Image 1: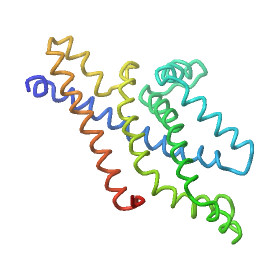
Image 2 (image 1 turned 90 degrees about the horizontal axis):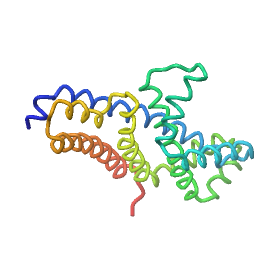
Image 3 (image 1 turned 60 degrees about the vertical axis):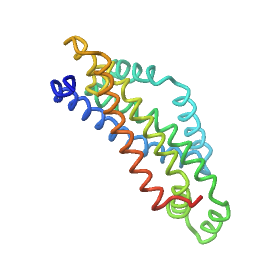
Image 4 (image 1 turned 90 degrees about the vertical axis):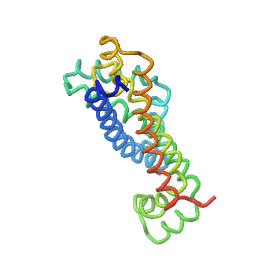
Length: 214
């Protein structure tokens, strides 16, 4: 317990840093994922191509490489932002590709007759997608979206290598102070467990309330 009690502020700072990264990156991933999923099923060919390229490139790019591209590449083009914001961009964009595919798979579970009926009533593509298809698709994708955001929370540990305050990065300071590396990582693991279990509990509640009965 000495490792935790003696360095509670340090752990707390890292924990809050990881929570902030997770929350902001999740919001960005969900927003971009929704947009790209819409592009993937859009009747406009250029939008489908854009969505496909986005998903293909990001899903097949190592996250660490994406961090290097964003945190070290963008400043060379004059875009200078706080490292935490760069980390949110990298995590959010990377995860959006997976969210996109989860949403698209949910959209594919909705019978085509639903969309055809909406269009026959004069609804536009945007109205059909937002008011008819997505509300039904949402019910079936709650568990995989939750799993994807849990993976995002754990992936945020990479940000510590780029001078971003987060939970895993606390081990370097504690190691320099001579604390037991085993207990240092145990308390770090407990912090990540709290975050992931909270996300899991939230999506369990959502699944019980809105999910498809199995």
